[in-house]
Image 1: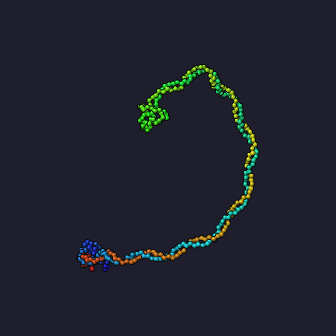
Image 2: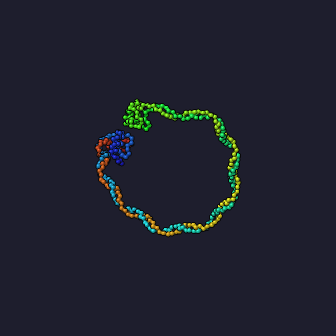
Image 3: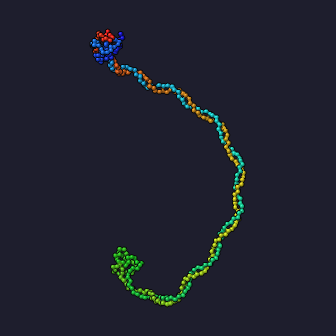
Length: 349
């Protein structure tokens, strides 16, 4: 009789979820399960107490090893390269150009002046003086005798006596204060008797002059006497007369003449001459010069660098773990004593 390996927890779950008509399938049957509906005599069950393992999530504290990285300074020897100048004497050749004087014969053309006589025809303007006759108007003065009436004054001078009034005014050489009002004399600071004019009486006129005087004056008077007569007078009259005259005129006339002149021309002539010229001749020379080259060489150097080094550290962490916890449950199981129906194998022990 073959036995089946059944997980208790799963079997219990299936047994609990089975219907009464299918419960006979879960009792301890033989290898071939019973097919068809369960027999009525096999539907008896009993209740048993069983312990099953139930998965439960539990938080636990565990010690774990964690790797942490810390910076650390380390040293190492590395190979580096540097450039070193190297000075050395190197022979070399160079070319220089030295001036050298040479002589050559060259032919050239030179213009030589040549003088030759030549007859030239030219035109000149010759001035000629000619005599010409013309008529001109001339103004002449002609004496003419004519009669005219002349009135002459044949008078004479006579001396006559006349009576006239003369005021006592000061003469021109007196001071301005003489013969004026006494008030003006006082204001001007001058006395009326301080001048050389004729003295007036003590009575001053309101107008500032002395009293008039009658004086006999003799003067010379012209007595006119007009006489009219007829006289012959010679007068000069201007008369325009046409008269012929001669005058000279300079007339320019062209004349063609010839002359012999010396004409200078330039004729090319071939000549030769020695010419000195300078050429640069190349010359190779040798010398030594100092050159500096750069050489790369390796050297060992120690350098410090920082690395992150791993360090194991123990730490406590919270871990969620699934634990199988035992749990007691009540399970219905079929009765072991039952008879198998016809056509089925024996199902019970």
